[in-house]
Image (cartoon, rainbow, N blue to C red; front, side, top):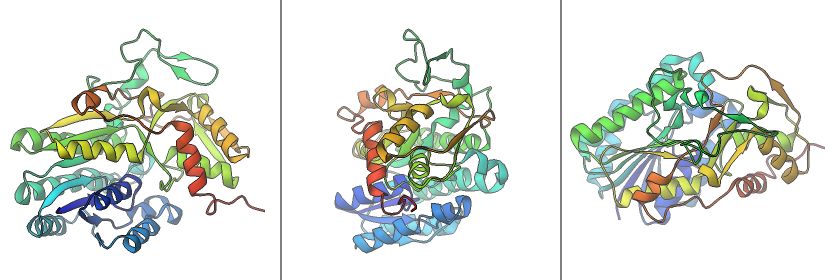
Length: 358
């Protein structure tokens, strides 16, 4: 059936995409150099996931390549297109942390923005009709969501029922005149470039502006991976710090299987310069306090956490995605895994690794 290129193939969404496309009959070239271990430490390494994929699938071809290597990226895209054809380029690799970006802006921008340009130009040169699927982020909207008229309840911040975005924020929200964080800027730069290659060159491209994306293979770390890291700390007794908003900030969370299901829908019926907000929406969202309660209930342990008044710069107080536009364009896609099921799966899959100390 041909080839699929997946960048960040050892990460949460990348590895889910690898499994999906191989089991759908494709060969997959996975570009992964485990920068995540450099960003967040050895415990966040993607190497174990890469080994599992290599051991399980003969159709998985691990390419230890830094996507900032323009010539290397071009070589992989060219060879995949020539040898069997290229069915999709799925770009999930990223430096994903606000805080880390501020510590090394050049690396953050080169990984998130410049490397995306490398992939787009290689696709334009060697596979211009191949669907280009980019995992963007809702952080392209900066801190604009923090201007919403939120109401405080016992466990969460919430929008009034009659607000236009109560059902979820759509892509009409402006990305201008706001604080983004350097990570938000680098991802917005990539997002706009993906759109431009779609509009200017007529290539089939999509930006999925994800909320919190999660699943059992997420290598949660202090600076990234909200639900996974929260469950890990609950299970192991590691202290956890909530930054700002009294723990009432709200996030929607989408399971990696539902993310990749959206990828597949787009691949089979691509458009040019498409942009969608993608998240758990009203079907799957939670506040920090609510998530802690669920983790404690599932793990049977109390979380050792503290509240800090220092909210992360550019962080959202409330985010729920409006996924109705994507569901309208691609009927049949829906959120299939809710918050409790996500946390129970994270707990079950990682029970041995995160065993309670004795």
